[in-house]
Length: 280
Image (cartoon, rainbow, N blue to C red; front, top):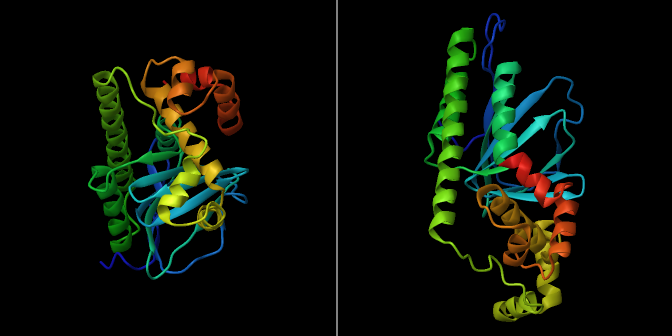
């Protein structure tokens, strides 16, 4: 199979009745030119879970005012109906290459929602992970023969979901081990006022020029991108460590705890304390 072509496959069975893990559609895309934003799920009627894994390049996901960059080795998890857009960009020099799987049905969506809510919307999954291999296998099987028995597709979907779950558990265990082995963590990002200006100078550009270029590339200003990175790191610490709210704010570059809490609420729509309770 040529994995560099765009492939879309529907998955079918004679009768989907019963408590089955149901894959719905799958495919792989190789994009070599910039494409307009693809609206996700705004017109969807039936609930569908979508797993989009970036193999090469990067894509941007927009939901309301929030902007996220999904890079190679990461999966974007979305649930429809849910407003949002994928901003897909690719060039001959830097193509976008990704695979995707949609699931439907209560058993599959329950499993899907558990992994989504426990581990977040953007997840780091190694390319060599069995979850990615299983995803490729489902696409390959759907291309060979999309119509098979319910039991066959349900088994394949279950093994993929289970491999995905295992990958996320192993990642969390690794984070927990790292946190336990380093009792005092340094700042994750520098927060000196002139940091970006110094970075621009080291790159040989003016601050204004570099701000313009990065804003065009990322879709947000460097300042906002930096804040989002800091807050994502803060969210990871809330999920994986027992550090206090003030300690996490300090380690992610905030001068005051109140400033950290306000910034966190703006991005995640809930306080750090509530986020920790819901995502531990």
